[in-house]
Amino acid sequence: MISIGERINGMFTDVKNAIKNKDATVVQELAKQQTEAGATYLDINVGTEAADQLDAMKWLVEVTQEAVKTPIAIDSQKLDVIKAGLEVVKNEVMINSAQGDPETLDTYMQLAKQHNAALICLTMNKEGIPQDVDNRVAIAMTIVEKATEHGMDMDKIFIDPILLTVNVDQKQPAYMLEVFSQIKLLSDPPPHITVGLSNFSQGTKEKSLLNRTFLTMAIAAGMDTALMDVLDTDLMDAAICSEMILNKQIYSDSFLKAARQ
Image (cartoon, rainbow, N blue to C red):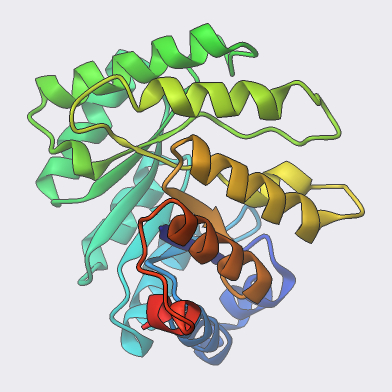
C-alpha cells in the first residue's frame, strides 16, 4: 500500500509553531519518524495560519529534504503555493490536489507532467462534493479521460473520492466502497485510489478503531493508498495484514517486519 504521512501539516500545533519560529528540528524529526514507520510519501501542508504560505511551503520542503530522501506530496488548495514547493523540490514529488473540473484538471496535469509528478485528483467540481455514487464516478471518469488526453501514465493518477466523516452522514462509507470498486473498472491499468483517512473519524470517540476498520474494508474494495497517520502502528499493521490476506504480500511468520523493510 502507498501510505502518505500526514503529520507535516500546519494544522498541527507543533508544526504551526515550527513554521512560525523556523524550527527545523520539529519538522525533520517528524520526517524521520514517518519515514521509519513506512511512509511512501510525506505530505507537506502549511495550514492556514502561516503569514507567508509560499515562503512557508518552500521552507518546509527544504528542511524535510535535508532530513530524508522520501518522496514529498505538496499539499495545498492554492496553485501558487504548490508552485512554490515545486520550485525547491529535489525528491520524487506528488501534487495534492486538483479538483475535477476539466479546466482545473488541464492546468494541474500540465504542471504535473512538467515536474514528472504524481497527481491527486478530487471527485468534486464547481458544484461541490457529490453525495451519491454515480456522480462521484462520473467525475472520476472525467479525470481518467483528461489523464489520457494529456498522455499521463495512469500510475501517476490518484483519484480521491473524498471521504466524509462517519458521524455526519453514515451512508457515505458504504457509498465510498462502491465508488472504489467502480473506479477500478474505468481503465486498464486503473488509476490509484486514495483518501484522507483521518477525515473519516474526525470528531468521534473511537478514532483509531474507525480508521483501522474502514481502511481494511477499503483495501478489499480496491483502495491502494491513503493520507494517514503512519505513526499509528496498529493502523499500519492493519494495512499490511489486509494486503497479505488479499495475496498482495507473501505470508511468513515475520510478514509485518518484511513488509516494513
